[in-house]
Image (tube, rainbow, N blue to C red):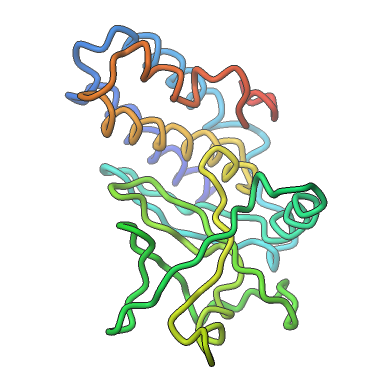
Length: 229
């Protein structure tokens, strides 16, 4: 019941974004609004909005965006499985190797994005002998980066010659919903990301160049692959 109410509240907040100023004078605004409203409305009460029974593999992340609030639930077991599969090819497509440098005062950031992690996260499903750290971006300006696998490995990674260097794997936004546990969370994440793309590029790109960037208009996305739309 609690998770459903959180979804209903997030859905109501999401619909308020349809009347934002950045939607004005956009040639495909009505199509964007109608398609996303239909997808969100259909999935907010989906019977598949159920978290896995094995709670130890689920990592919750609180996220806020323009008045909307939700707790995203990431499947850490699925993250590791996909990482192993992604590592079999010549180059990884889903988990992109990155490095960041720790500031002299101890803060962590990647380019302009703040870097968030929880050093006290239990993460009981993560092996003790691994080194993988998986990170995704969340909606925002600039998009904050959030560790969703390997939080307790962060501090121990700074040692020796790497006392200020941290290596991690960044998951592109288009793949991130694959690791969320429910259809509505997948939809809301991509909707918020589409809003970010619109807000950031509306003034500098022509509509014909902006529209293909949006997940809701892409011929192939997590929404179509997982048959959410």
